[in-house]
Length: 382
Image (cartoon, rainbow, N blue to C red; front, side, top):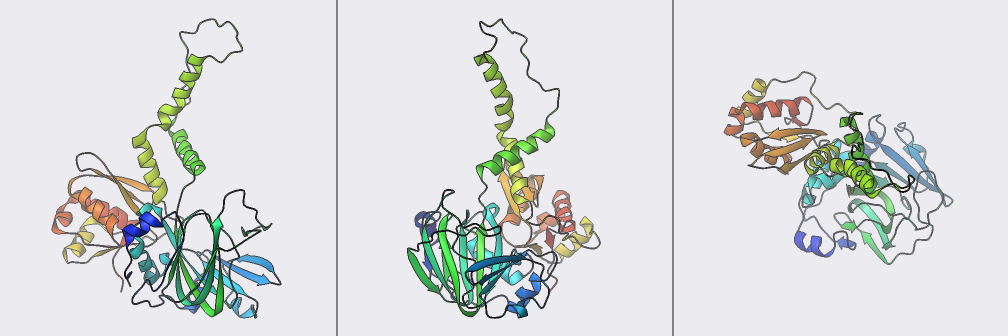
């Protein structure tokens, strides 16, 4: 599937993080990529994050998976919605949906959440702190969009759901299969299934908060600091008032902090590792038996393409003299020469061809072996 008649540059200029946009018939050849029964099956597995939202007499309830197989048959006629996170990690056809949204950098992409709802099902009026493309996959859903919210916007009291206390829609659309609604951060929105068998694919984008960046970067710095690195004042002079914290002392103390926080090269490495960490790093995707670089060289020499694991995250920072700092699943790799060019190629698409120069390069093959054995790369298993 691919976008039809979509102007990426105009979208980024006029709508991205500015205002909602309805895209009718965005896919010229839309076909729903996941059967509802398969989605329900994923929600029953231990390693999959899933929620069930029900609406009973105007009271919202949220349950967390994994669910027993008979849970959905016991729901009766009350409106309900099943939400399953990171379905792209498990279903290649769902992961392929992201390809059309690669005009947004890799490090911003989070995952594809898939929802299935009965008639009247939804999650209530709410707002998110991230951009989201809502693809109607099956059935119909009525979407309402309201004004931009902030931290002062009143919410209903609820332990699991952030529901708006006063939702007043400004726009409303009925989405059909293949339609897309783009909602920027903090815009109020509410989706309600019209009829049964309603499926929506939500492609979300990460946006780290200032608090997350400062906290994460500071925590990383603390691991490298030694206790002996302390404030010193060998030129101390008598002050008129011993209660004053002098300007020179403040400048020296501030410098002790900002010199470390201001290291751009160290920050780039930390952020690359931080932002490329898998959504579920505890899941082991590696092969049962490790492959040697030579075994992989033979396979690649035969024309076997490499596939990126949909659960993995790839990005890079360009360095000097053609060098590249590659980030994959929370690890960083310094690359140069043939390996640097291959690292950029790795980050560009989900299917990766290794040319003769890569196959002949020991550093490149060592990198491939490392990524293959940690489960970030693999071969097509059919």
